[in-house]
Image (cartoon, rainbow, N blue to C red; front, side, top):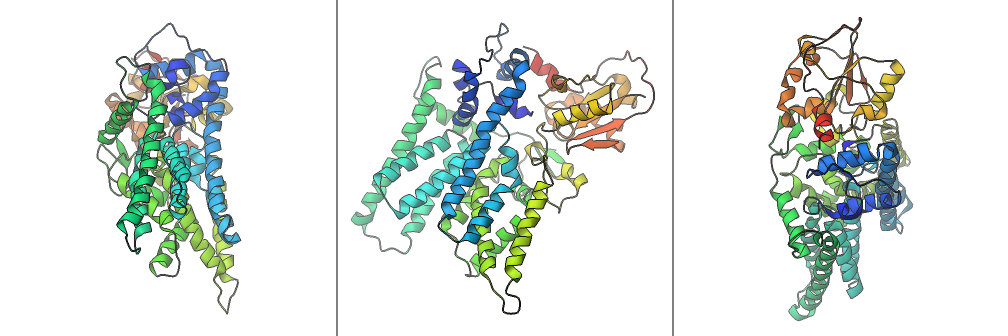
Length: 514
């Protein structure tokens, strides 16, 4: 269970569309749609204007006994989108060489970021699917123009734009691909501009009509009904102008974005064989030894460049680039597979096989910690230094932590945690810190702290400063659970403690209050 699950109250009746100006509704609507048929409780006597409180009560109060089923059903929708990405990649390369097909599918199947986020109720994997389909569909439209193709492209663009706002980058990418298509051709104004204009009118008209139709159900419930496109534009401008979200990078918590954040995240959280093949592909392309279709290499570069100065939240923000980089890296693998050296004709095929096996082992052995995966260039104890938030910890190890505590027989636990899923939901009995704990660890207690608390807690909750500046972070932990929970086992017998409670796990209190 993770904090992403608590974003799921969008589900019954009007609630599905109640936050349309904050987040586009398609991904959340699809992920929540199966829940409508589960007979879940949605009526609550405690009304709150805060959507986080409503989410908390829906999941953890009204339907607490069905929490596991809600999570599994919603995540299954995201998982299908993850499989869909592999299916589209197969359709793109299926008519090309067998080595290209195998390298592409291996890189997709053992890509840790895609594996990780295919198991969360977030919009990033659905967006990645729609983004790939949109670019592929538009490229086919350029190669074989038709009215139906333009309408289909516009419809798919609407789905992408109503999945996540960053998909508006599709429009400038389309324009660049159109420009590349025209480069080198003799331009006859009447002969070329008319079909191009008609194509764009069909695409834009269908796209904006589709956006309006998706937003229409939600706007009907809003007093002072306005054009649905207004609410899309309002949400887009709010997101584009948003600033001040805390960024954790290289051990520093700041509200300033960093231009090196996404390149570093891509380097540290991608398997080394994938990075080697990707760099090889670009090197071969620059030297003229390998031809890579423009839509496969240009699209991810534009997307990453556009997001460099914004929203350094996590690698998931640039997840749509992965299928394109996979296609590019796979072409380097194909080139190397076909390469022959007279003195060692099998050298390159063996090298490619070895690289793919390395990636399979690197990613496979990290199971189930795909979210917190870092490649072998990053030591285990350095993960928490380089990147945080959804690059490392969004509560994915909470249930494992509870199971470990129960297996070890810990019955006196003090919690220092930042997140939205209370471990007591899984049966863990825990206590808050007290003033006495600030002076030093008390005998007989086990102290648990998660990475989010260490990395991000201070930005949201300055009240936890006494813990962050205290003994816990000057002492070697007894051990770790997964990559995100640290524990300190203090020998001795617990003594009565009547000192006042400290704000050590604040989100659980805040969310449980109406």
